[in-house]
Image 1 (cartoon, rainbow over the protein chains, first blue to last red):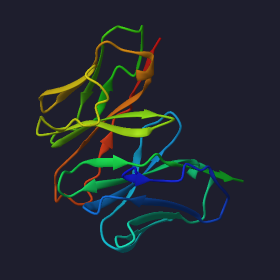
Image 2 (cartoon, rainbow over the protein chains, first blue to last red):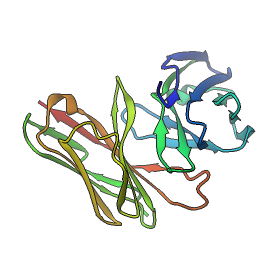
Image 3 (tube, rainbow over the protein chains, first blue to last red):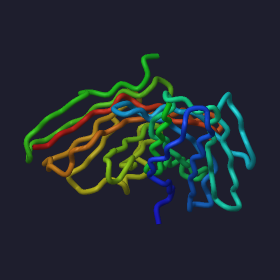
Image 4 (cartoon, helix red, strand yellow):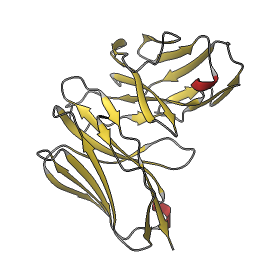
Length: 111
Length: 116
C-alpha cells in the first residue's frame, strides 16, 4: 500500500462547478498535509496546507482533513479552465519530517 | 531570494555515462529533498537532508544513485552509470523547519533527464 493514494483521474468538471479531489494516507503519524498544483511541464506549487481536523478555506479552495478516517480532500468552487492541472496530495510526518506525495489527480475543467 | 535553483534544466546523455544534477536551496532552509517524477510512478522521494546530513535514502533506487550536500547552499544527485530507465524529471525542494507544522516545501524548476 502506498503511503499517500489518489485517484489518477482525469476528473472532468464543467466551468463553474465544484471539483472534489480526494486523498487517503496510511501513516497515522502523519501530521501535516499539503495540496500542490502542477501544470504540465512545470514544478509543483503549494495551494494549501492543513493539519487540524475539519475545514480550512482560502478563496475558492477548501481543504478538509479527517484524521480518524485518514482522509484529506480539496474542494475547488467555481472551477475555471485555468484550474486544469494535476493536483498532488502530500503528507509530512512529525517524527521524521519526511514529505511524501501521492501520484496526483488530473483535473480538466471544460468551458 | 531567487527560489530553489536547479541545473541543468535539460540533460541528454548516453547510457553508461555519469550524470550530475545540481541544486541550490533557498537560503536558511533546513531541509532539502530530491524527488524523481515519471508518468508511471508519480513524484517519488529519493533522499532528504536535514542541516546537510542525509536522513533517509531509502528511496534511492540503486547503488548507481548517490547524493551529497557538502554545505547548506549546494547539493548534488549523481547517477553512475546512467540507464534509459533513469529518464525522468528530477526535482529538488527545500523547506524551513519553523514550527514543524504547515512547513511546505518549495520546488525548483526540475531537471529533465533523457538517457539514450
